[in-house]
Image 1 (tube, helix red, strand yellow):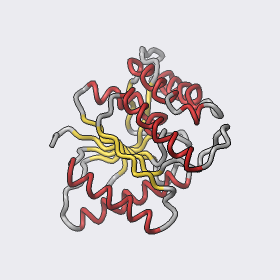
Image 2: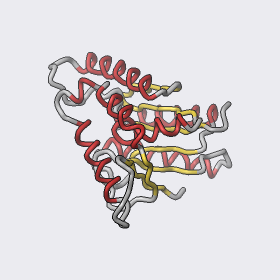
Image 3: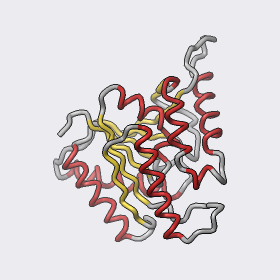
Length: 222
């Protein structure tokens, strides 16, 4: 068991890469072990291919594996849920969370924001996580020291943490591009690079910064 484990939860196969692919590269370079848990299989995503949901899910699984390899993630868990609308699927996700907590004892968790993010699946996943952590706290079980949220569908108006990802933007870009089925219909790469560039330029009001790209996060109180 590593004492430097960090858990990152992605509601869909490409959320980690879009929201914090640069920070992931940075954390791995600093010696942290990343555990990536992808909750749904993304079968209902928009594509230009006209394929069945089952085929899209298989494609997205391979894309997630390729992106993880690009970033250097060694522990990738693809839960493969069709959705998190039904209680039995929510329970399946929470059981997997418990297994990961007991196996890896992560120091920190990253996820999408439970209120700000406009995607309903993102909010559901994060709230299920918070519910699981609350139960573990009541049961006196170990819980991570920090919970941080990364931005995907909704830029944050305020944030608690900023990470300089200037040296990791190429890896982040490549990991997003690995999700070919998604970037073929929506240019996530340019969209998020623009946001990361904006974060870097406007993070310092002194008039000078050598940061070229940055990612920001909101820390949640447990």
